Amino acid sequence: MSGWTPEFEADFTLLLKDWLKQQGRTQADLRRNLRAVSTRMPALLEVLEREHNMRGLAGLADRLCSVEAEWHGQPSSEPAGVATADEDPFGQLDLLLQEIRDDCTD
Image (tube, rainbow, N blue to C red):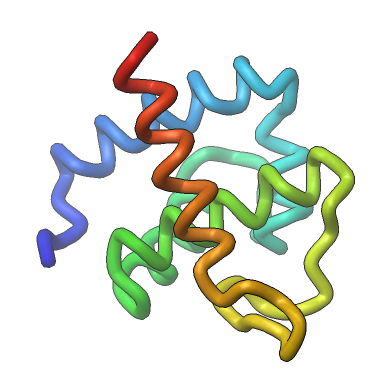
C-alpha cells in the first residue's frame, strides 16, 4: 500500500476539487458528510488522510463512494464498508469498479 505523500496529497486535492465541481457540490457539502471541523481543504484532507491510514486506498474510495451515494439520495445508515444482512457486501466495490471503467472509456 502506498503512503500518503505530499505528491499524493497534491494530486488528490486536484481530484477532490474536480469531483466536487462535477457533482455541483462545495467543500461545505463535503465537510458535512465527512464531519470535518472546517470547510477548508486541509481539514477535509485530514479526515481523508485518517481514512487512508486506517483502511488504505480502497477504504478512502469507499468513503467517497458513500458520500456520493448520500448526495444522490441513497443515504447509508451503516458506516462505510459495513454491509447489512440483506445488502450485497460487494455493492460499493462494484460501484467503484464501474466508475473506474466509465472514466477509462471517456
